[in-house]
Length: 330
Length: 95
Ligand SMILES: [Fe+2]
Ligand SMILES: [Fe+2]
Image (tube, rainbow over all chains, first blue to last red):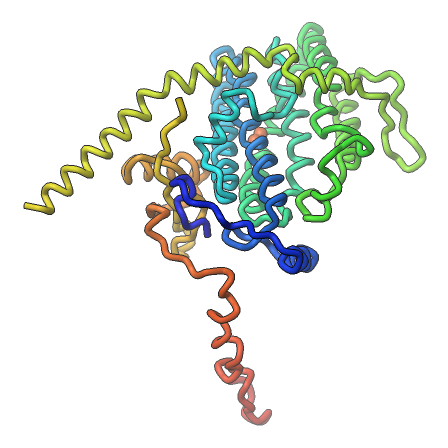
């Protein structure tokens, strides 16, 4: 269990690395043992996971913004209730993940401050705008669908707290994808205009969603060690292919066309897609996507607007503590 | 300005099925009342529990994983604590 309050600062002389310990650690990983917070681990394992889990947490939190944009304009009470519940889940996912990241020794407050300072990354997908109601359907269907592909293998990740957080997250994601697909079905069975709206949303989201799986295998920097440490169990391209193969029949069911005219099914039954514009991906990650500035500005504003609440709650707790001490002394 | 640190709590939930409270995760809150409310919002959005405990994380004393061997050795070497250690003649049947 994650028993220390890890955000109370502590002198850190934990990682005295030596080859023997590293070998024992790798042997534990190879034997499919889970690594727990207080276990010895290589500094690089700690660093990799802190980066990955906190980026994942930031993504859940920033990911509330594009969908939050439509809560007040959902077309019915049923849709509004579902969207509200979904966005609330994403907030929960962020919190489970920050808690998992903290067990590695960096406090949530520090991680959040890094994100607000623009020094931490989050998923590129949340830097795209939600222009119509069909975008909400598409996000649930494709963005949550891609997230599920990515997250299911993480339930068996070698780091215990991350794996456990992902199990909770995955249980909740299924509702997200289904409510999105239901929106798409409704639009596609609706008027010509509604169907066109669904197609337009798919056209805009398709390529950014494929980019969610990260750079192609030859170009990805972190994959080798992550695989060795069983943080990653499938490569970016493997997951992307799985996603495409699962999605094509769903698009066919909806009667929508995937905006990739060159796409074809090979003999193995896999759908081969055209080249992805990795330049766009790099630009979005570098902060130059359509909504990067907006997203950070919205997070900063929410954080600043909430400062008085944090201060008041801390002051109140402190006042109660002092009063209790006084009464005990009487 | 850096965000001030808010204390960490461990959350335990008893599910409907009458089992003991089980650790489900942690959260940050300034006091016990807020910790309970946050635990409800974060960990019981789908009827996961009928009772919640929150415990300040720094009130928990944990065994040291590096002393796991020494700590649990006494249990490992005492096979006579298990029912299968004892022979009961077949004629007796299930016991
Ligand atoms: Fe999520
Ligand atoms: Fe989701």
